[in-house]
Image (tube, rainbow, N blue to C red; front, side, top):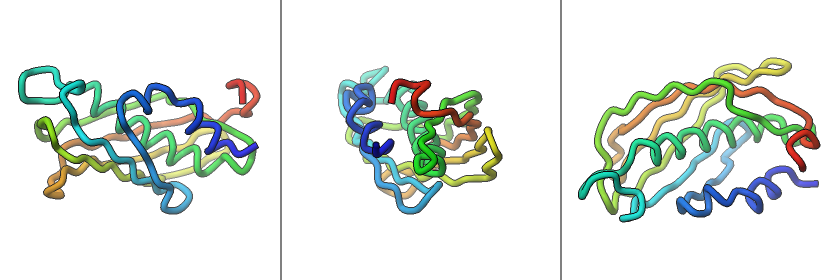
Length: 138
């Protein structure tokens, strides 16, 4: 079973938000999101939860890409986000992950979100636990 493809097929939340990703190499993922009206919390700005979801997904798929070949999946156990700039409707966001350390069970990740002007709008650190894919229903 291809764990990454199964994740893509089953991730209804990411699909609803309109996010898509590309694994550049194990641990490094580029995740994209075009901000639309459905993402807004105010007449002009995106809800922070939307940006948090983008970051969690970026970190999570980055961690997943490190363990999928072992038939494992990951789950978020800690997520810390710093919002640095507002995000407006029609902004084109891209988030990049980076692995800080992969242990036997825990994976420590980092990610940044940039807008279309390459301005840093958010940063996150996340910790993920890896488990057998069958535990998550894969």
